[in-house]
Image (cartoon, rainbow, N blue to C red; front, top):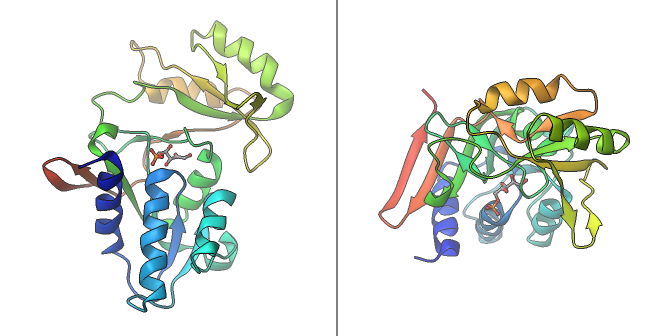
Length: 227
Ligand code: 5RP
């Protein structure tokens, strides 16, 4: 199966947990987009009805509306029955790194409002240790330069997230600094240090938000559940 087929398989499996009348949080990224497309199809053909959604990004809201998936402001429909989103890294304890698509702050806000949060991913996202790739950190624009220096002094190798030639601006109007978690340190300790710094708004470390994961691999689908 191609990576895209694996994403679709995970999304289709998660769609099986959606029931008529539910409130849903829609994630951001290529895997979450496959879920939104499948949801649009079953709402259009009438297999599911009375679903109300909220979005973790402007991009997903636009995609959803284009497929006649109803999107509401978060506060109008929270708490949510279910959130469904992708992830960048998943460890065996269902801790995640998210935000390489730049939506980490809204994702964490929406997913903390959900009774269940199913992560959908292909098996390449499952890691032994979180921090193989960068950890996104959303920072207020006023602090970007001084925090870049501070993160460098903390041995975190910061780099400013770009969108082409321009710095990336999040849906909340902030900047993103991608940092590397040193192999000698646990990500939770690094995140605790980061959160002490004024100007750090949120990190892409999701220690306890996910309740379930659907992982699609060449051998089929498997589910993980929070213990
Ligand atoms: C966006 C995210 C995405 O869920 C994450 O980056 C995974 O994306 P993809 O499904 O495209 O691999 O956290 O902020």
